Length: 377
Image (cartoon, rainbow, N blue to C red; front, side, top):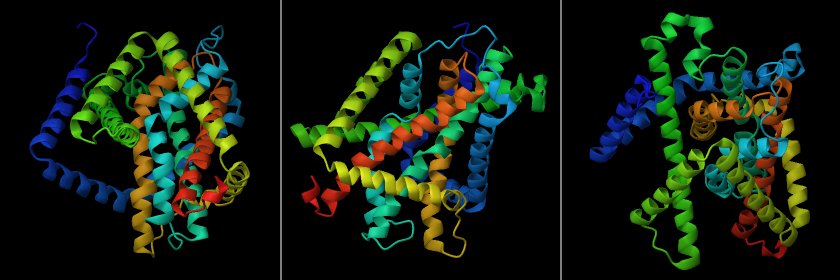
């Protein structure tokens, strides 16, 4: 236990308090968190949009600036993983079960339940639904991950500092503050935010797996079944992490992406191939042309649309930020030896394009079923 720091105990205590609160007073916890979320969205939604947009701009700037040739490590350091393994681990760490859940549910919601602006079920709503899915899961999300990972990797491998969020803030606040109580608070909050983000994703994932088992085999959709799924998934995660990044995690990531590629290829071949190609091209064009409008849209004169932005865009930006310490640390760990330019090109564009392909194929197959256009299938 010598390697266990005080941050671990602080974070553990905070997590236990929240778990007990949710266990004995779930309605109260839900009400308090809803009030906090609403307050942050209403008062600081503009800040989230500007922060994420400026982060993306800075990431793109670093690709073309003179800083792009700086290596994340020493001059003699070489990348530990091949490009293919690096890409698969980037994608698996950054998205995982959340992507599988939202590839169908988010576009369907935008098109038929709560549209970002168009009449529900209309052609415009269908087009907007995939465009905003691209937006929420594309370059903005990866810019958040990439910036946190870049800072951590630079300080750890180039400056030989500990791989902690607080260590990256030493130039701003000084070593004394970051090695004292303020630094411990920052690291504790980073750990807690990661736990909350992971818990939410595991919850979505277990519910989806349970739903699939129920559809295929009639498995009851009950809490004990979902708990069993969570236990099995957690054991697999622990075994993968225990075996090391270079073995278990790398092999599991490669295997996952292999399965995903086979699934996408099968859907592309047996599905509405031409329709998928047309929709991907059309949506990509809409995403590019409306990029800045979506990035900074607040709808201050329309309460309904402002509520939609709070519920979706600002929620997602907060979600990615909460995940960024965990994902950033992992991306930093697997990126040693790469230049900043190579790092940013890989982190920003490759996973985003894969997300676009996932959403186009899976969401539009579901939409075609939804609107009874099975003639395409």
